[in-house]
Amino acid sequence: MTGGAPELPGVTRVLGEGRGRGVARVAEAVVLRRGRPAHESPGARRLLDVASLTKPMATATLCALLVAEGRLALDAPASSLLPRFTGGGRDAVTVRQLLAHASGLPAWRPFHERAAAGGGRAAVEEALWAEPLEAAPGRRALYGDPGYMLLGLLLERLGGSPLPRLFAERVAGPLGMRDTRFASELGLEVNDENARAMGGAAGHAGLFSSAADVALLGEEWRRALEGAGRILDPSVAREFARRDATPGSERTLGWDTPSPGTSSLGSRLGRGPLGAIGHLGYTGCSLWIDRDAGLACALLTDHAIPGGRRAAEILAFRQAFHDAVAEGLGIG
Image (tube, rainbow, N blue to C red; front, side):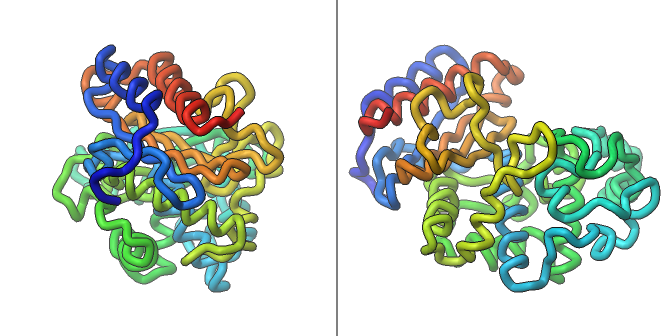
């Protein structure tokens, strides 16, 4: 993407108002419609911490590639690849359940405290192996980080390389995502304390990217779901985009789906028969893919950095952004 790209006036206004109200100091967006730029902020290449967008962009995408190659089975026990993740019901947790936040693991634990006590990354790994389940696998859906931290370790074991190298070689390089790297490679400090304790690269957080690159990743998933992905197998992409069967779940494998009335996707997008998949990040970023409209909407901010996260404000800001996209493109 280069200078002179289009801007949707309503989107530019919403982003400027968000900065003016102090929702974020930095707010950049790129919207692709069937691969063509529909909106590109002037700072589309600005590098920001994308927090939990690491989950779909790196971890779930790498898992999808390995599933397509027959090297990873979704319904295999995670312990078959992580032999220390055993006991206390953990042997029954499948790769699918880790991807769908249905493993029974807790939402979060302060693993970084163990690293700070002198154990480093090894202490975090020891804590992950021993973390007790809070529920039987497959009985509940609870969004959280520990499952994706385990998936990051699983990918490193199966792929034979550190997560940053796997991502660079298998995803970022082939898709031309020139801005996207883990904090460990960039020498930057990641906002997430557990990812920091893992050295700046983990399965749940640690990735830095630009709005331009996040949109490219979204476009790859959109194309794959239509049968024309560059690196993703269409049948695997569709399996990953299907809502999980766990009772009460609105998750897919690596992605979220819109929640009626409370979705950050707003009131107009994702309402078609194919729906939408997306994900949020703690730092105020998001990626939503509207399958019917052919959109990949990437929003990046530094919302969590200036003065702490304010959930109601960032939700309203995200909704206003997506509604402005829909209005500007005549959708809904």
